[in-house]
Length: 145
Image (cartoon, rainbow, N blue to C red; front, top):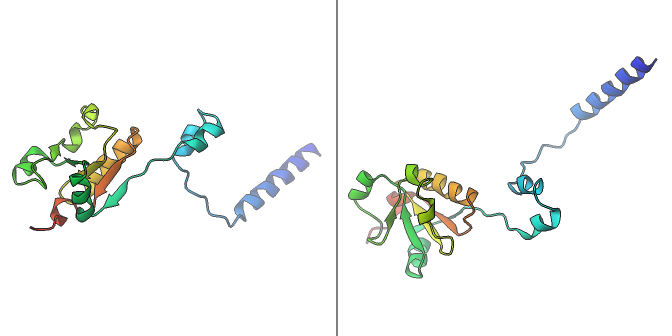
């Protein structure tokens, strides 16, 4: 009799789970933090994200003190930079050179087309940087003077 009740209960759970129409929602990065910290501490911490901006906004921010960081290879940089003040830190070197990225400044990240810069931007956010801006379209989208 106990087996019959247990089987019935399992069947009922399965039927309920299969009939659920609610889609699973993606989990935010903050859920990983909740396991380590109390809920009150998590609520106070903003979740950093990558903000994508265009070149007009990036150049305006650069004039105001934001750093332009070029994540292309040195060979690509030899063909031209967005600005003489742009710092070249190739994507593959970022983990070893993380200390060269200041946390107290806006970081304007660009590459050739925007894919490597987005990967670099996400890596920086995952490593505690909150002022990260990916420049949409990379240097290919840079307005000509």
